[in-house]
Length: 315
Image 1 (cartoon, rainbow, N blue to C red):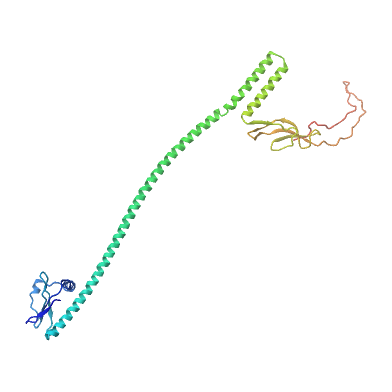
Image 2 (tube, one colour):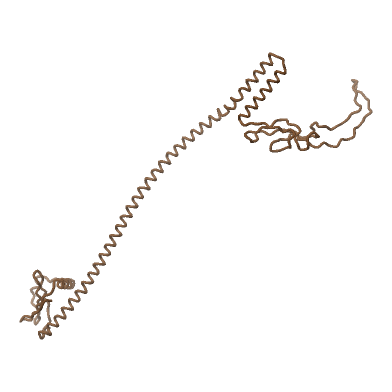
């Protein structure tokens, strides 16, 4: 406040800084509506006085009603006016501080809203990017699944075709190996028709038998001998039992059909006769009858019943 004076009519004039004026104007604008043009020309109540405050160039003039008796002695009146003005200015400062706080709070809320909006925009962009990547992966997976299904269908067709070919021509290699055996049998038969030499025929058959074994060996087929071996139900199939002292009881006495294995797996068991311990010999029975049949053949005489090694048991 630069200074103040009072004119003869009771008006008070003072110089106020622009910041204080702006704050006061904002306070007044919030509480007082601007009067209409016709109301500004109304006369003041009788006995009322006005306070005129001179503003710098470009400022506004504020007219304030002052009750009658509001002016006393110059010094007291000036102090009272200064106190009221200070109170008004204090109120204006307080309201201005509240407005600034509200403005700062609004700015903070606006900044927070902007940050949240930016985060939402970034999340949206991230989600869209991930969605595009997921769609690309799904599309690629779908194409791979279609290709795999087509490959599987082609594989089934090829496998079925190969299966049919194996069923038709799978034994081709085996049969090729047995063709020389058939050729040797044909030669043996042809030689037997031209010559009665039994020894030559036997030799040819033995050679053919060896050729059979050779062809079997190429395909993993091997024969095994069971005579004299302990009876093994995994390899042998018992036809019957026979009393014999030639081999221990429970051993193979005779081999009716030879057994074979295919790559160490049993292909056909051997059919065998298993030995058992001989029974005790009964005393010999003698007969003195000498009767003959009408044809002159004897019907009696001395006979002996023995138990030998001839198979007599049942399976």
